[in-house]
Image (cartoon, rainbow, N blue to C red; front, side, top):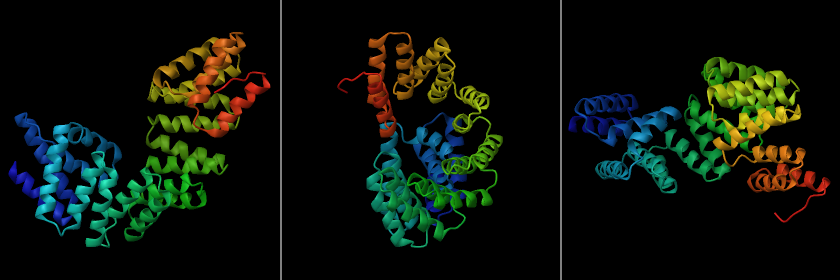
Length: 346
């Protein structure tokens, strides 16, 4: 096992991430043969997945390396010993920063990433991960600054381009987000997330047909993406193409039976067709999957109101208003109630 440790540490210092992954994988295989447990090779794989922008794979290795308190302590001791042995190497600061951010100490990782930047100013990765910390903390302008620097240093860094596009889109700067998504697609045409992101941005711009084409391409590349089915259903619904919307919402539920938002969307479509009983069943299933689904509570309130059960309706209206995060939607619910002559202290 010590041979694996030494080889991985040497590869980290060199920044040879394929070698890190290769040696960590071999270590995991050795552990499996002996039924022994060690979180360190899984953490090393986690680091490489993060560097590659492979979020799903990173999450899987995170569960094997940084979930239990004992495992976190083992990895902490390993990374700190590595830093003590190699205090002048940027990649070591990068790895210790990733440990801190992955183990719930994101803000502490900032100094490690900044030190990595000082030691290796032309490295894109520390800027990228520093941008992620700023984004999670709501410091969007700082996040954009770091993502832009990462893209400048490495124009082929797809994860940085993607995150930059998302950060722009969250600010409503669609004209800045869309070129980033298009560039990712140019460099990686079979990236379903890039097509989905572009579809979302185009839909926000009101370019519905191009958005539909991008969502369809994302689904061709990944047919089981419930979120994209749901988003496409939403676009169809806003255009009055209700049969297609219903089809996509049902596809979302086939891909993920616990997709509460899809249940709620179907419930509202049924309610609008006066299929009250079926709508109520959808809303209740949605709440079993997501007890904080404000739109499902609102749907139930409307069902009870139609049935003349005003007390139960008002209880669900109150829950909807309490859970609704969109101020405009919350005001809309309140205005509807006032029109009906219903008021109460919320």
